[in-house]
Image 1 (cartoon, rainbow, N blue to C red):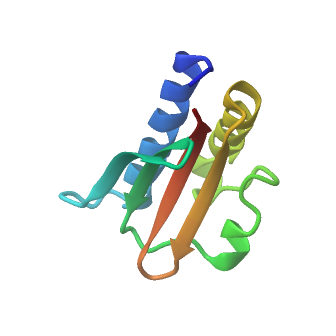
Image 2: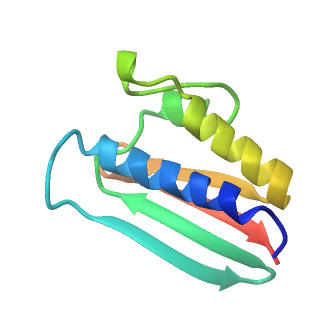
Image 3: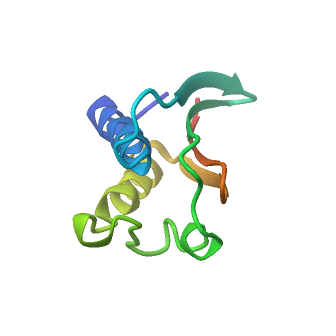
Amino acid sequence: MKGNVNSLVQVINNMISNSIQAYNGKTNENIEFTVSKENTNIVIAIKDYAGGLPKEVSDKLFKEMITTKGKNGTGLGLFMSYSNIRAHFNGNITVDSTPGIGTEFKIILPV
């Protein structure tokens, strides 16, 4: 895998922080972090069960800076994470969110 490891650490840190913040202060909640190899890609998945994103939000992710945190967020972290993965790793980030259940982000990195 080629790319800047510091950029990857920043992206993963941002994704985990977003999952923690999605729980709105609830404690003892789960965040799943997995790393797997799928075909010629490394896939890093971060999954929470914090209630998911509304469809109108998940449809806009990666296309513009959008936040669900109100005045406490800018939407810059996820937008920059996506840009870093595309530019420095020739990879991708996907989102699968089910309202009322949770959200899973996958960082897909070619090997």
